[in-house]
Image (tube, rainbow, N blue to C red; front, side, top):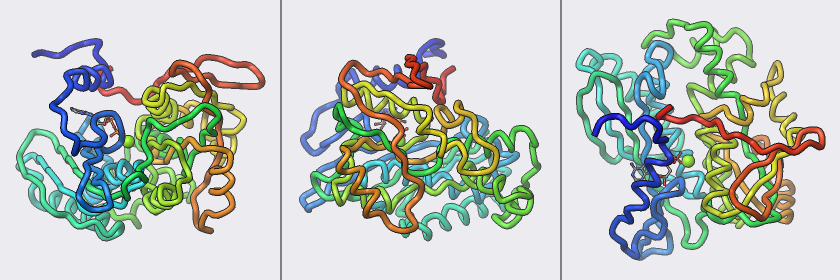
Length: 342
Ligand code: ADP
Ligand code: MG
């Protein structure tokens, strides 16, 4: 089949989902969440996820040094493991490269990937190699979560608070810096070189958020272990787009208060524009819905180095839709998250 103008990524996924792949009771959770959950004979379920990073679609080689690409490719998959509240246990790396990049470029990419494996104590257990005209990195990650403890997209309930763990919009700012200034970050660039090129701590933080993201793995495990959320998703496509996934899987509506986003907008340097906070993708924050008691319990009991944690709105009864309250005025929100086929 040729290209299919007009079909979005999510339409394509729901077309696959509607085909109803063969049923097995071992697949406890199939298409539709951050990970699939497979039952095991132990006390835990197995969480599995796979993600691709494709040159010129998900990154530009000119400003994505291979070591950072290696790091980020594991980080984005671990973000999906975290979004279930699972503990990552192993990963697989499938790599396709143009033949002229099998030397130092490849070595740096693997260095960055294995740095991330060390950082999160996740063994690389296998993978695949192929050649292609563009760099393609596909990472499959596995995790375990005690039976009954996985936090799914489908658990949101009317009356829940909507909360965010982490910093929204920073990755978009990092990307904007790269697009505007088009630095020639060569293949050899280190973290230290990046800090130096950034010039200011605020810029360095935004660039790190984009190039070297750190998903909130331990925080998510703590939330799941202690039953502190009804639903959870990682923010990869944008706050509103990912919230919409929770709403669709849970059959509920949501309202967001823009005033509650102000602290997120001013976490670093000049305030981030509202659009970056609502629609900027690749933040790898966690978006949760939780009861008021769960919210207070997180506030009261989280570790001293816990990332920023805010309530930004609430879940309502009704068909999946998001309304935004701005200065007492309510408007229905258009979703503009990242879309592959537009
Ligand atoms: P995420 O942003 O968390 O990686 P996606 O939005 O990519 O999730 O995918 C949403 C859901 O659709 C996930 O459960 C994913 O496993 C599933 N999915 C995506 N692409 C396919 C595909 N080609 N075939 C089957 N399931 C898919
Ligand atoms: Mg996800």
